[in-house]
Image (cartoon, rainbow, N blue to C red; front, side, top):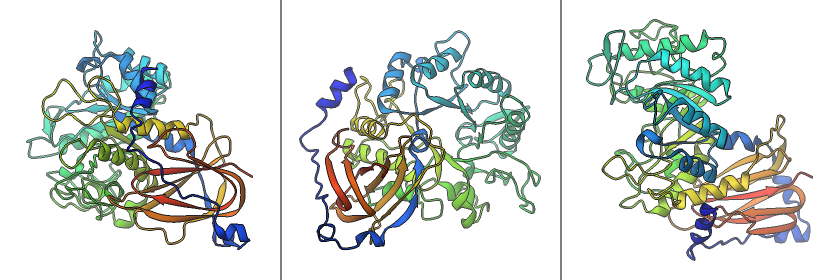
Length: 461
């Protein structure tokens, strides 16, 4: 209830809805606008919601479990990046901490070796407990071994070591151990992060090393089911504000100027070892276990909020099955700029937390939709800063998300529907969770799209 009260207080007067969304003149006079619409397959709403994850701290770093649970539920996160770092039998962070968080919020965990660990036995044994409680999502390899080297079977790798062979063997063995276990083999394995920093070509730019790759590890070595990157949206190669900032960061090819898929799995950024072709990168299974941005300089709290909101949409639209943003709440156990969080150190939500709360509340759906339908629609001459995604919830309602990524100004777009719909509702998550507009007898509507998403809810006929 405290967070709900804060939500109302943050609806500041600068947040104003501007929608010249209406039944078009052509619809009123009976012109056949619907003829230009085309059928689009919908994606289950729950699939998008399940992609929304977050990195967080736990009691070992000073964040109480009850506060973590409250923040997770408020924003609607479906998964959390977890692992054996900081985990102990006596606490303050234990395996029971994760089980209780799952019980209170429903979140699942990707379970990783995290920074510098090589304790496969601990990883597997703890994962089995999570799996038995239906709290396990996936496995993850080492976190950024370029920054946190590992020692595996007496050999150093990553970090300042001259070779990454120990990192490669550890990831290979992680994969084999998971896939040979009857209780765990159904869970996907996500790769290490920052494999683009390889010093020697051990082949970690592949999920499975293909024949003829000429890597130090043998052809056929299997590392992972999913590629994993940390594509933070502000980067030395893309430092400032710009249109389509988060859209470009999610690009699977070289158009991405941040630390994305191409620089880790296409052509490694450190030593230019070749990996997948551009065509292969388009469909490569992939996740992000860290992304985000910090408030400071040009990145105001409003820009931070808009970036994080569009990031989840862009990532999903462009083929990322899961995305985790750093960080749930600003860290209080580290120095420097810690203004990454959806929440401030006092646990009050920033605008990013409020906007995400509104988005997940509007889309809220815990049901299953096994056979999503199709909706006839088109957005003629869609500008390059406007994007769209069609969802369908378990009640059958279509939810068409249309979002803009303009720094300044707005685009005016027409959404043409294939036939007349009795009632259409339009939502703006930067304003609240109630419909901003309800239209009746609609076969076309006009939207003004600037720097955030609008949700058009269209019940089935």
